[in-house]
Length: 245
Ligand SMILES: [Zn+2]
View 1 (spheres, rainbow, N blue to C red):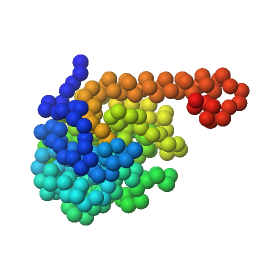
View 2: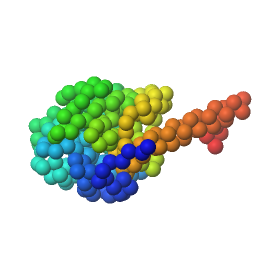
View 3: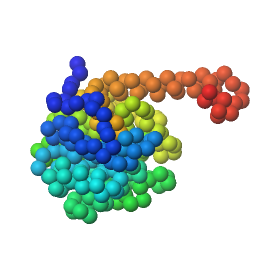
View 4: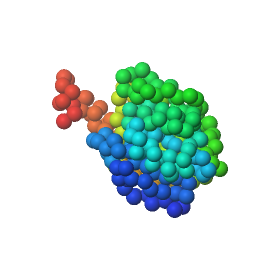
């Protein structure tokens, strides 16, 4: 049976610079870093009551970060980063400076694709529970897109903040050696076994049926892998372009 999150508007499309309340305890603020990869812009989520948490501050645009603080009631208790790619974490230092809140995230790998300003004050443990204004966020380590990637599950709503592990309307980039398709699929299998309702991605609209979407992504990845294996098996020697055609 599909679980749904009360009050949420799953397919409401994010707009660059847009602010929207998705759930009684969750706001979406879209950063003005639109482009081919981040689409309409990285989504910053503000969750929980009282002085809540901010997830993925996005870019350092002051207007965007002021909007984040506005929906958070002027301050955040904690700043959480799903990972340290340059479209997700640079705003963390600005928010820390402004509010004194600590930044939480896993250490960045040294692969040349990370936000150079990323300096988490605290690490995160798989399974750790973080209080968020009367609600609870569970940390789930999900390597694959990046080795230091985590998702956050708002337990009371079954809503998973997916960062770049799952996106709406597209598949995520896996760049080895830090990215790993094997770990990506293992992380998806772990999530599939959890009681998730909806997915709140770092890019794009909320995805309403988490299980269906995870199944779809796994099928797509395995089909691509199968196609690649067959293409390699049918040629004695081929260029990369030949195989990809
Ligand atoms: Zn990323």
